[in-house]
Amino acid sequence: MSDVCIVGAGIHPFGRTEGRDGMDQGVYAVKQALKDTGVSWEDIEFAFGGSAASGAADTMVSQLGLTGIQFINVSNGCATGGSALNAAASAIKSGEYEIGMAVGFDKHPRGAFNADPASYGLPNWYGEAGYMLTTQFFGAKIMRYLHEHNLSTETLGRIAEKAFRNGAKTDHAWRRSEVDLETIMNAPMISDPLNKYMFCSPAEGAVALILASEKKAKELGMPMIRLKTSVMRTRPPGSFEVFAASIDVERGGTATELAAKAAFEQAGMGPEDIDVAQLQDTEAGAEIMHMAENGFCAHGDQEQWLIEGKTEIHGELPVNTDGGCLACGEPIGASGLRQVYENVMQLRGTAGARQVPGDPKTGYTQVYGAPGVSAVTILQR
Amino acid sequence: MSAQPIAENLFTSDMSALVGARNKETGHIFFPLPLTPNDNIEPIALASRGTVWTYTVQRFPPKTPYAGPADPETFKPYVVAYVSLPEQTMVESRLTGIEPEDVKIGMEVELTAIPLDPDAPPSEQVLIHAFKPVQGE
Image (spheres, rainbow over the protein chains, first blue to last red):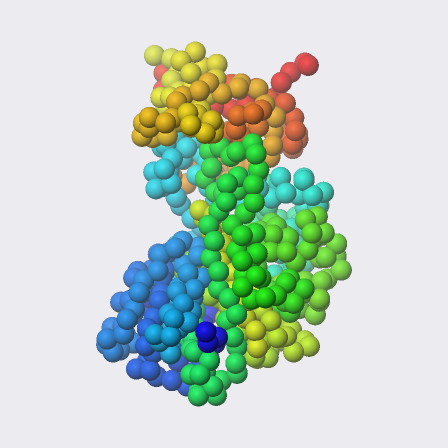
């Protein structure tokens, strides 16, 4: 079976762009990706794409060209981008196609996501009594994690400080100014122990990736960035997910642990083989938990790792080199693909001021979201 | 009419316990009762005492569908916890009778009912579930 290669990548800057809707940002990213690859829209044989709040991706053809392309919409919550990539890779691996695209885009209103209890199978009182907030879930989950593993709240601040430091070096990031640890730790609390610098915001943005068979990638003469694996998993019993009116006394594993294990097995690698990683950081606590759930460090070692700077751009395992969701915001449909975009830049050596030194050859991404889904990719040059 | 619970089937009729759900086949217990009846699920009175497993504090007024007091000027932050009821389940619940700064994981708490809006006229009050610290033990 031939390897799948990522031969082109395009991004619409994340953050807020007045006067340009989510779909238009998607089209922008597709055009950037085509230009990056040196092909035209007519050359693309198929596409998978999606958004959570900005419409059906396949309607993009009216702006890109009515080539009759097979264009399948993906709607998988926070894993939409990851699932689109997964499906695109499978289409090429099957041998049916040589070159295709995965695209994700979104544009969300300001402020925390507003959710309807009924759509989660919950009674109305759950919302009326004030439980229908994702921020509460994140606060309660990391509160327990810090307690269990004896980590200080300053660990959260260090994650945010790193995110803004990296975001300041990143063209596509939204938050482009550094914030010092003291300012972060003294900011107003949102949902304890998480304060306003420790949460990402719903935002806007788009990413398109062009995938090709190994043979086609060689013809195009692009750097060979191989997608060694793309795995998506749903939650096991006893996980702790958003909008849970009760959780089991008997605790279990996580979707991320399942996805990470499968991805490393399929790629024939281990965490020690990864040179750069992009891990879901909806809030600062998520990055802490995901460092361990993906197997990069033991539970409880995160604070020491951060103090030693191991996850800085110049550290042993750089994590969230573009500032992650904390600095880029979270347009749901695009967020997972942004992570892959960033690794493509890092492995090509074109990440500019945020370039990981030492010629990185392997890149890992992990996206996590409601209602307990996780998607992992591993790239290798 | 006196204050009423915010929903049917949330508390037992004497308000002494929350109503959970038990799967008759697997014994799995969860909360609350599902919206649609299911032959495999039976109601069960949950334990009224437990311990705080984790918590957070709601520091800003929630948007709709929140129906409690939401004026940003007067909003009072509230504690949301998961209370572990031994060998049953962990229930998401507000804590009452304690300041956010004093909450500790592992502390013992017991069930009570509190008005969603303490300033509403008594005849219009709705009651929600909450746990309060166990006193003097």
